[in-house]
Length: 83
Image 1: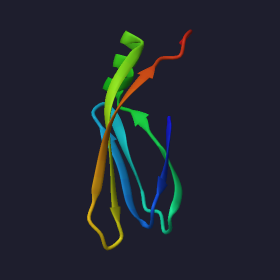
Image 2: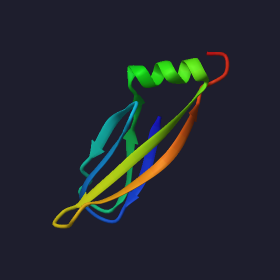
Image 3: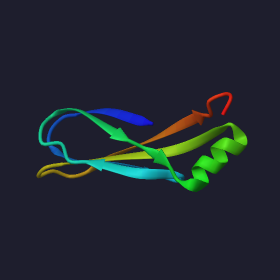
């Protein structure tokens, strides 16, 4: 799964959450960033068992020379049919 973000400037962006493998990027300028996200073994097992998985995803951006800001979003993943 991928997450596309548009950032206002250079800095460090990280994404984390329960049942989610974390990802981070260090863009050198403003613009779009694409992060590849994956599920932990427990998350993949829960998704397969229930057919869907609700996650709390935390996105943190710390601009170069500035203070960090964060955003928490609820995301529901649905398993592909036939798998």
